[in-house]
Length: 574
Ligand code: 3HC
Image (cartoon, rainbow, N blue to C red; front, side, top):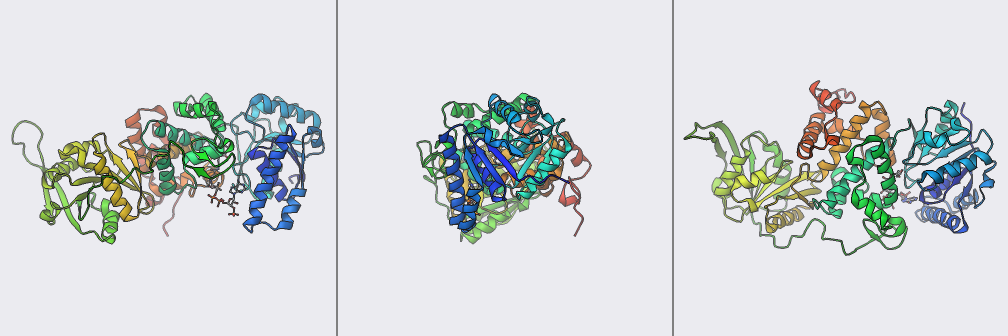
């Protein structure tokens, strides 16, 4: 039977500590909330006042209940006031010496059966535990920001944590209305280990100029349904915390992808820590505000449609083997009232070589080629990249008028098709990501004319799709950020650190993802994920991007996910 804990303490009243104190008080517990000086305590109190005040104004909390919640929290600067606590959570800044100092003080002040919990997001709980005289009663209790909202609590047990302590903390987390996931002590635990690789990658992508800050944020919100894009989230978490978490992960994994991106360390050094200081990747109306104000760096998201060429008619070219790649786009173009001419290109057997060199693919068309020749923009289905798709672009380069924009839809690189067309500056990539047509990645190769890309962006606007601009890199924005994260989840299963259910719970309940990574892999198809990861690895040769062996093995075994009835989970036919 777990012990019912009613008298608790929180040390450190920053964003997380104040949020944790609120969570305890809302669940009816009596809370002693401690910080070093009056100013810090005042900030903590203001945080709880603000948060509960917002809940009242939204009709989520009765004013009388709010008073009761506030009356259950005693704010103080005296650590000795924690002498009667049955459990104390330390949430002081992520510096080892600070945390060990607090834990040693608590060890002296609190009775021997008081549980000492740490909300560390990056330090080893084991290393913190052994600095106290009661390592068996020390445990990780990792909340997620904002603590009153996010449902996950990672309960981190070390090799010396008493089983009864784990049980008590699990029961407490459940009583708080949270979902506890019990895991071992490894850098980043589950959620941060999967989240921060992705966040760091997004920073590197922005820093390399492949895509803009707002575009990456928009792409991940609309393309993956995430509640926030990576830069908005980094600003919420705090850039200093992000650097700490990544540093720890890097020290443990030696994976270069975890080494904090230089831009992060520079922002941290400059004190641009995110919302809490009023400036990070974005500039905010005031410290702790969520309201973004435009700053000097704010470019036009998605690039402009300035210089767009007029589009009065659209051609659609499907090729045998990937005829459906443009279906959704074609329907949207028709719905927008633009005349559409469709043709199918058949790529047949190679013709015998007429001289030395490669045989040319025999290309046949069905459909009104003369109308296609008059189109201002041609969408070419290049999703499955059938052999010979370059021949289609070569033929279109000759058939259509100069200035006609040739759009390669799909995931593949754009530059090879641009070269094949003989009119490289007119070729633009377009990848529609996500469940509907809300997000369109508009891809410029190194030779794409700005007006050609602007023409595609203007078309996207007519179709109601939100265009983001990106460079011609494997995976563009969404796939390049999504698939390595999915691959990391597979590695975590492979390493037997956490199972599919705990991983999915961590990401949905801790970070508000609509679907956990393991469930998403089964939906997307393990073969699709493997192919995407192989493309990313082939381009970068980054060891951390190599496809997880378990992913390869499941694909080889034909366990491709929901489509085949079996992937990471079984999917019985309905
Ligand atoms: N405190 C209390 N409540 C808050 C809050 C806060 N700081 N911020 C938002 N809320 C509440 C609102 O009151 C609202 O409640 P209601 O629905 O009952 O009225 C609800 O949350 C939704 O808020 P908003 O409508 O203002 O805004 P959004 O719908 O955009 O949600 C969000 C905001 C909950 C922050 C959402 O964007 C989200 O889930 N983002 C992802 C956050 C995330 O990934 N957190 C984990 C970070 S990693 C971490 O913390 C680990 C650490 O170790 C680094």
